[in-house]
Length: 220
Ligand SMILES: NC(=O)c1ccc[n+]([C@@H]2O[C@H](COP(=O)([O-])OP(=O)(O)OC[C@H]3O[C@@H](n4cnc5c(N)ncnc54)[C@H](O)[C@@H]3O)[C@@H](O)[C@H]2O)c1
Image 1: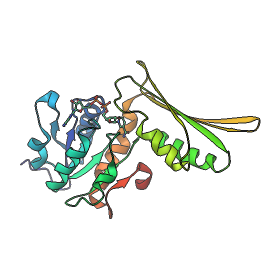
Image 2: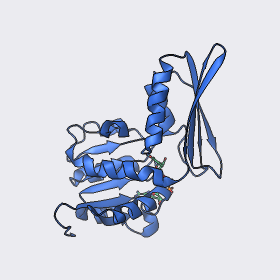
Image 3: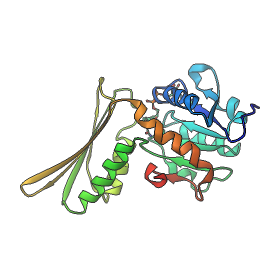
């Protein structure tokens, strides 16, 4: 078990070799109040179980078919978990005990604002559709952000998914009314956009008074 300096949180990253996970490792290493306690990823030959004993918090950016199992393993070990992985049912963790769960379909502040503005606009304009566009390595469709946006807008909003090389993560919410449309668009041009939100969640997950908590807006 690694000993961190007092006040320093020991953070493990699950999916550490991935596009987002590798950026999180760098962000944790650069933060003075956080210690990178372990990198778990089959690509690195390290299992999550191998690092749990060294961690206060685990950040999971893996795949839809493994995120739930990973979160349950963290909770059984009494380790808080911050989940960015999309395409699985966070509600399955509703009665889980042992530690806290924080999940967000999008950790970029601009995307959180897009969702808030879209929810506000939907109260005033009758019809809307969502177009979400992502890189072609993304496994789930529609995106977690699009599903969450539709939910916040009151439900019945068609979603169109585009998967192409060259894209990172983008979303347009197009609202229509007689003689006018309104388009609200967010573009993630670099995965660094997610880092401030992820680090905020890492620092706060241990103090949540309920679990799971879903959505970065709950911490702002
Ligand atoms: N919430 C957000 O803000 C946000 C932002 C971007 C991506 N995402 C989501 O995060 C997830 C990861 O995205 P990505 O683009 O980094 O994917 P990626 O494919 O680049 O990385 C996933 C990594 O997880 C690893 N992995 C698979 N099974 C594992 C296991 N059991 N334990 C540990 N690691 C395991 C893979 O080997 C891979 O390196 C996706 O679900 C994506 O939709 C969320």
